Structures are given as C-alpha cells and as structure tokens.
Image (cartoon, rainbow, N blue to C red; front, side, top):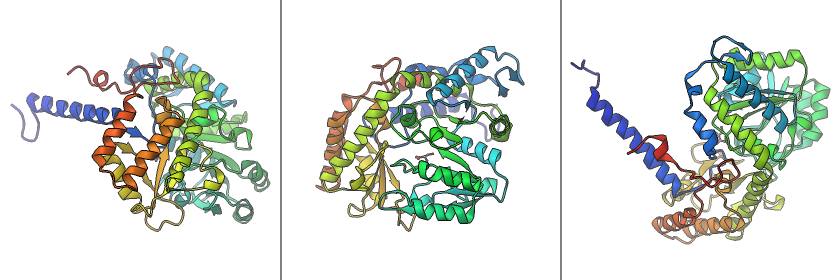
Length: 439
Ligand code: DSN
C-alpha cells in the first residue's frame, strides 16, 4: 500500500513521461529556433555520448595517480589526456579540469589566492561583469571587497589611465579581468606592468571567449601578463557544461594552491563524464577551433552591421560593434530589453535582456545581448546573419505578426540543424529522442 504523500508506480510513470515530454518539447522548440544566447553552444555527438557513459556513476577525488578511490585507471588516462590537451591548446604549463562550472572555477581562484577582507579588482555588473564578482555572488561568499575599475561606456572598454590611478591607490591583491558582456579585449599589455608594480596577481575570466582564445581570434591573456585563467567550457568553446583552470606558472606553491582551491576547496568529486566530454571537445577544437572562432567573430560583426543598417542601436559602431562573439543592442526605442526579448522568443528567436552601462534597474534593462556561437556551430555564415537582422527589423520595427516571423525563422533554421566544426560533423544537433529513449 502506498503511504499518504508517496506516489505509486502509476504516478511515477506519469511523472516520468511528463518530464520526457517537456524535454522533447524543449528540443523541438530549439530545433526550429534561432539561438542567439551568447553563453550557449551545442556539444558534438562524440562528446555528448560520454555524458551518459559509466564515468557518470563514479568517484575520482584527487589528481590522476593520487586518487582516494579504486577503479580509476581509465579515468586517470582520460584526465591526463584532457590536461595535456588543455595545456597544448592554451600553450601554458598548468591546467586543472576539476572545477564543475565557471563559477566554481572562480571560487577556486578566490579560495586559492585571497583571504577574507582582501581587495580584488573587477568590473561593475552594469559594465558587463559576471555575477561572480558581486557581493551576492562568489566575491561575497569569500568575503573579498571589490575594487571597481573605471569603464568607458562608449567604447565598452576600461578607461586605462583612470584604472591605473585606481589600482595604484587601492592596491588590490588580485585583479580579475572578465565579462559576461564581453565585446572587446582588455588592455592587458598596458595594465600588466601596473599589476606587477603593486604586487597584484592577474586573473582572467575567459568563460565567454575561451574558444576564441583557443582559436587564435582573441587576446591571449596568459601571454599578456595574466597568471591564471578560469572559465566555463561551453560557450565559444563548444564543450560540456563544466569548468577549467589554466595557469602560466610553474611555481609549485602557486600550483598547489590552485589545485587545492579546486579540490578539496570547492569540489568533492568532479563530474567525470563532463571531464571526458571536455577532453573530446578540446581535441576537436585543436582541429577546428581556428576556422570556427574566425567565423563566429565574423558572424557577430556582420550581424552588428546588418542590424545597425536597419536602425538598431548596436553599441560600439565606431569600434566595429565587437571583436568577439557578442553584440550589445540598446533597445530603449523598441520597448526595452524585457519586452524585446519576449517578442523575439514568441518569434522563435532566443536572446536575453541585458544590463547596459547607465541602466538603473537590473529588472528592466534597456539592452539585449546577442551571440553567434551556436548559429555558427550550425554552419550559418554572413548571409544568414543578414537574414536574421531582417527578421529583427520586421518584428521590432515594422510590426510583422510574431507568428509570421516565427515561420520565417523556422524556414531559415531548417537548413541548419546539423553540427559543424567537430568530429561527427553533419550529425543532427537536436537528438532529443536519443536522450530520453524511444517513444
Ligand atoms: N550567466 C552566464 C552568461 O550568460 O553570461 C555566464 O555564467
């Protein structure tokens, strides 16, 4: 007999089927949608299959060869390969692939390199910083105090002279350079000598631009004066949802601190299935990363130009809109960030509302953020970026009904549903039926 408050087998089956149906509906929606979230991407079939491998069921705390569990022989082999691939791709002597996300990687750095009460340089959230550097995020959890850099909202870039003055006055112990609205490289060559002068460690959060760095299309922070790089591995690097630490250091004490920050600092077991998928993604990026990164940036710049020509206020027109995969569009005239993002999703175009410099309310920002990692992964090029800009124009300027725009979006997308730039290129990108079993 089923106890009160507990479900029986029939309820369980109904619940499982409901979950499967929701996941299938989600996948069908994305199959027909134009995905423009700057932080999202698609995993290759060879990486994806490892997520449901037996690695998912195991523990392997510690480092390869120094585990706390038995049965890790093949896990060690894969993790050593993953570490080697990471060090090769980013041309650095140190890697740790145990952080399970970008934010966890950031926490590991804070644990390793700061004490509560320390000052840490960063951008403000309204200037595009990630929530890690907020008092309600990882900075607050570690109890460090942000020292905010000076930001030029017109160029969406640090004001170098004013920032140098702040650094010399405030003397933070650690300086974080990294953004969620990441349009341009940081002026690291100008700032690195000042960090050295004040004894601060340079830390780069490369989550958004990791695949561009690996593809040689963006600044290479570990060779521009940064000591440590933290990142998630699923944005412009089309890997699994996971994290990574990289370092341009051979100092054993520093390496030990970073490793101890990852484990036991902020993880127990790392996610071995995701680590294996990351190894595959790094191998693929070594082969395809240059071409992929080049097209991703070209697509973003082309989309920026096409939107601007259609009357959209794309930030940084004088700078060519972006040097990354991301665009920022001020949509005050079109009704604000939230209204636009909602109108777009009703038309099958996936974006997010985004704070822009000068915004007063995080709930009602005046911007939307667009990114090209996923559409590029699906093989879209400059011609398709112009077609996407036309859809924006018809919907947000010319009053076209959302259902008409959604139909055109689906038509456009129907030619781009297989993965590119990976082992197994040409395979279906949206394989929901394989993920949740047969109907
Ligand atoms: N919040 C993510 C983004 O969309 O930029 C990064 O973690």
